[in-house]
Length: 255
Image (tube, one colour):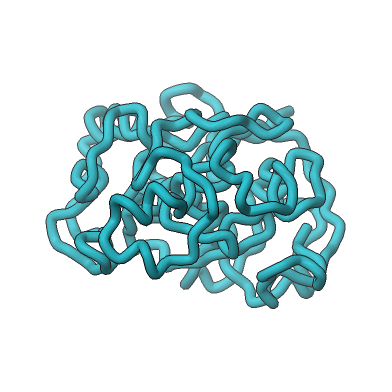
């Protein structure tokens, strides 16, 4: 787990590289979709009132009235749910567990990286080259440059994926585990608190708890450049904040 010093654009929080033993678990093939989240909200009357940071014009800003229903770009029920915070994801997991009688949860950070790598040790599950991303992931690319004001100044992949914002879940090629959109589309929440390095990280694949002020997000999103679209890249945010490029997928412990 983690990235070697030789990996291009790695962060100091991605080391030290260490071995982790992962117990059997299942992970959703795609991120939770807008349609799936809508079913949860309808069934539970869950409140999503508040605000969300959305991209309108060339800047991400906090705007009242924005939520998973209105991200300031078009989506269908097949797109990944976004403007979802960590607490929202926990509520969805609790609902799904109650509906199915099985224990659903967010993946731990170690589980997420294991799943994203798909038995690879390269920076991305398709290799080291960021410019091959567009067959495998929805990322900041030439499409974004053409359709999003201000994207000309972003760090871009030198390819075209056809989507300026989110893409329907599962549109791109899977990794060797059959998982799709592990990189790109929307950042994904994990169970873990954020720590500044892997020093003293658990070796059993379980969630690394902490003060809970920030939780780890993984995978990059539709507006992410090559430095963020890597299997080892770590992001973080507060559990109450919503952004139009953050969603989640579900995990389940297996016997």
